[in-house]
Length: 270
Image 1 (cartoon, rainbow, N blue to C red):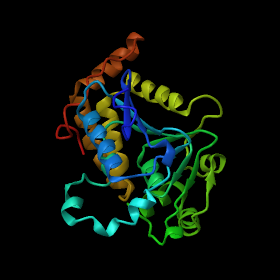
Image 2 (tube, rainbow, N blue to C red):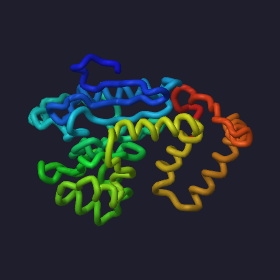
Image 3 (cartoon, rainbow, N blue to C red):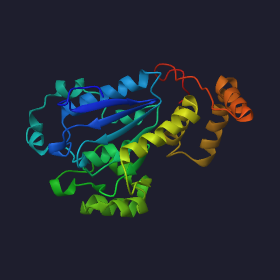
């Protein structure tokens, strides 16, 4: 585990997986600019670390993230344009080439729910709960949740959750698609790390990065556009070494030995 006990976000290597933990448990891990800067810095570091092949994010204590720290919101008007300009893009988690798995161990509210939706998929404990919360705070649907949420749960369900700000428990979250896996017993963090480790050990980092790009880029295109793009990406894949290793390891009945991603995304098809 890296970071002092008082560090806002902790990081722990679990083999090829980086486990990231929001660490304001007495505040249900409420979001602050400082927490964001630390979290995004860890994601940046994971992006360029060849030994990290997947990231799991969770919260310390009883919550995943209770949203923006309301005491900090009172001072939102005091933040200068220069301060805003220095910060990383708000949707940085969506740009991570490596799998980002959420381990939702309690409430994910407002901005905390947005962060959960930025993950590629989500594991949840029985205590996992979701609320958009924005309408109850006099706010709007922030940080792209009005784009993300309908794609997970459908338009009318998204309207329900955004307009009402009602709380969604773990079983409903699983049923409507906010959660992908419900972990009835044991540690949801351990379950998410086990899944991420399996991805890291069996799947090509380059393939996963490209598939993540396809899922994002093809979301608003046509089927024909998706097929055309896939054909070009397939030709690029066949020119690489990962296909050779993937087929050979399958025929040899052994674990694959795929290379790590190159630094940054310039060599990855987008």
